Length: 284
Image 1 (cartoon, one colour):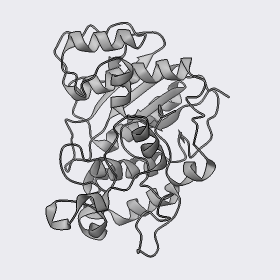
Image 2 (tube, one colour):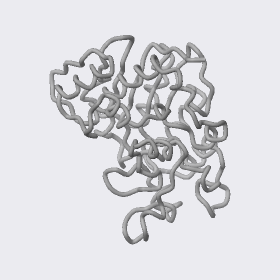
Image 3 (cartoon, rainbow, N blue to C red):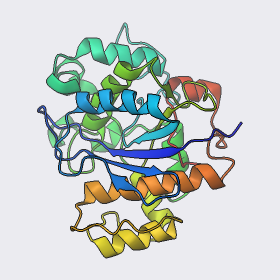
Image 4 (cartoon, one colour):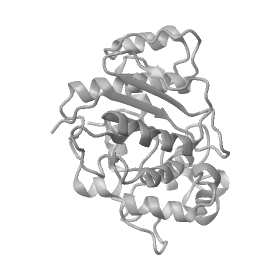
């Protein structure tokens, strides 16, 4: 079954400390229209995004995409945090474990990374050889093998390219919305209902034929959108890269979901991988 959605929403996420995050941007591609920013200029909290999503999911069948890893890798090593006792072995149970392990404000996860399970995460040269921390999920390895260059690991917690802080705060969000909207591929999709997927924004920038990873101009944004079969956004201001990531990805999700029958049945995705690690929508 290929599910049908009326709307496609991309959310550029942030794992930063604090309660409001300038790095969060939300864009929606509704029907065949150009994607638009949701509340442009608003500084979102993570909890606010979760609550907004649940309300929006009930209005119309919508595919929501978040750019963080929905779970750490488990297939390759058999455990999310090898050597630790009491750690679950499925993504859904792991979200609840992360939630119980954190007392940070606004769904933050700094205590999980910096205190409770510090030895599993790379924060700098004092931790040793970085490569020893770089463990990957099956979909990440598949994308890397295809030349997709998704080289960040959920255990990498330093630098601009790190994804650990965003991913573990995102797992708290997934726990919060769990049971209120389907989370693919952990949950089966229901035709006529909304769903949440993991995205990688660079995939859609590349699908638009652009080689750079950051788009910060209206002209470049509109070229990317047109390459993805979307009308141009025609913004009245110069966007930042969080906004362009969200806008381009919303259009790219729509094109992929409506033109590629393998979008929700990628080669290599097994039930065990779905339960344990999830999958990035767009890695085929």
